[in-house]
Image (cartoon, rainbow, N blue to C red):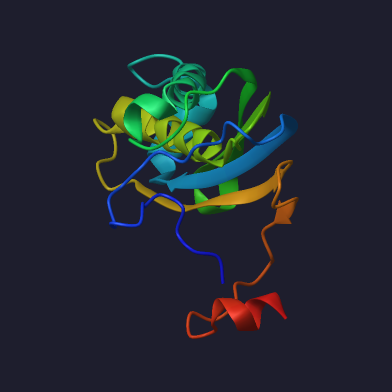
Length: 173
């Protein structure tokens, strides 16, 4: 089992030193969903929300959020991102909008936190722009889908999660 890297020997929080690591191409994709009333969903879909282009503004917010991750999460490194893309899928049957954020860089540390931050800011912006119509919207299923690059290699989220009582050692077998 790997130890926590964000603490020194005295148990104090530190920013990990990645100076000796090799630059590699890195990519991460995260997703999340916001579910809403049918009326709110239709206004987004038809572009008739009173505040304007909900998905266009949410896309910009997600991109900006990914770029500002190191300002929001204390121990994240400042990264030179080479790509941030936000996509939306309208899911009519569940009256939800799925947001996907893809982030790329070439560097010494990964972009998982940037992808997750981008998704969260996109979803929060949808909520902000639509709250006058539906205050009961719900954000859910926010997670890392996949990542590539770096020492730990590639990760693809399994379709089903291991049970919480399974130890790290058991998962690695």
